[in-house]
Image 1 (cartoon, rainbow, N blue to C red):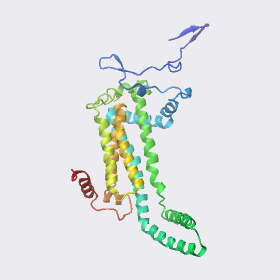
Image 2: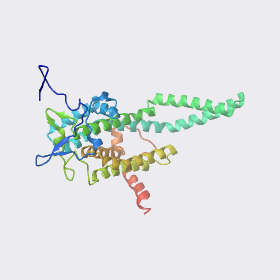
Image 3: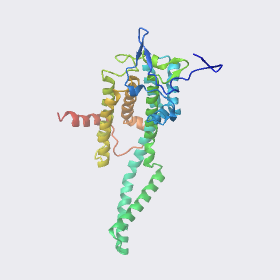
Image 4: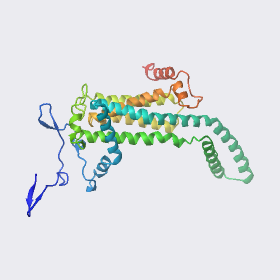
Length: 336
């Protein structure tokens, strides 16, 4: 609507530029307008980043290029396939996990296997170096502290040389985390933008489509899952992934044990968090966790490991799934 001011026709500023936040509206099945069922914090629109308020960092992230890229990927899959949004979310998750994180996970196992195969050589070097340092310390009258520091310095140098020789520095095994976690964040925020009406494409509201493109008990992907089935499923699958990792490791260090307990706690805390976000996001988390579980089991297969050229190690088993079930039974079932 135009207004006349000083002989000129002016267009009023949009609500967001005036600092007024308009809650997203979604049409009901009868055509009436209803307010979103999400919590107030979940429906805040993406506004100008330079406001300096407490939400500026999140608004900047929600409007960032990686998030916009994730939105384009989701919209592209939806346009190309014509599938409902629940299927598009699942298909996109499977495609990204299969094309990006599975190769990186295989590479991670490749590096870790080479590091594991170096352990006997590292132990042998440590034994000989310890003997040499002891002799030198006795000759030069070194203190215990000086001898210990000399041992550690030379040991780090020799181990680093081994990693360079075999091109298997353990830091390379962390590349999966540096790719997978940001991708998870960007996809989640993109779906949040869709579910709260912060994103439109070619004149239509993705939020309106999500509100009608659910399935089963979560027909409205912009609403919360009041049954808690999706949130609990996410927590259970994440706990299964943690337990499979814990059962695989024998004689974990104290640090590894603490990390395992921490990840278990995070998996449990994900349940109430997932109960407060739109079902579209929880569906993505569920699909991603399920793919993570499948990926973990697949990388235990001796045939698949040979296909990925992952070196054999002393801890490898010809019957990994049978061993896993036996360990699971001994830990959780036989005790009851």
